[in-house]
Amino acid sequence: MEIALGCDHGGLELKKELLPLLERAGHGIVDFGTFTEDSVDYPDFADQVCAALEENRCARGILICGTGIGMSIAANRHRHIRAALCHEAFTARMSREHNDANILCLGARVLGIAIALDIVRVWLETEFAGGRHLRRINKMG
Ligand code: RB5
Image (cartoon, rainbow, N blue to C red; front, side):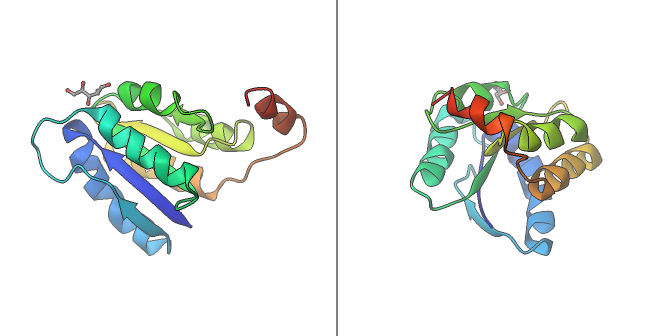
C-alpha cells in the first residue's frame, strides 16, 4: 500500500530507521519530510500527511515527533483521520482492529527502535474488524 510519512526534527532518526522495513514489506512510500535536523513545526508535516490520505493519494500514514503527542493532536483535527498514538504492539493492533486507525503516531524519544519497528509491523499487517466497530466509527463522522 502507499504510506505517507511525516516527522519533525525529533522524529527524523526514527523515520530513517523505518524506511527499510517499509521497503522490504513492499509498500510505496511518500515521504513529506522533514529531511534535516533543523527545528520545524510538527503541524506542518501532520497536515501534509493528512491531506495525502484525504485526497486518496495514500492509504495510511505514519507521523513521528518526539513524543508522538503533537502529531496525534494535529492529525486528529482532520475530520476523516483516526490517528493512534501507540507505545507497544497491543495498542497498535487494537487501533487497527477496533478503531480502523489510518494514521500511526510514534514518539521517537519514548520508544526504542526494536519496539517501534514491532509497532509499525503489527499496525500495517492488522486489518479492521468491522461490525460493531464500524458503527462506532461512523458515529464520529
Ligand atoms: C519538539 O521539540 C517536540 O516538541 C515535538 O517533537 C513533539 O514531541 C511534540 O509533541
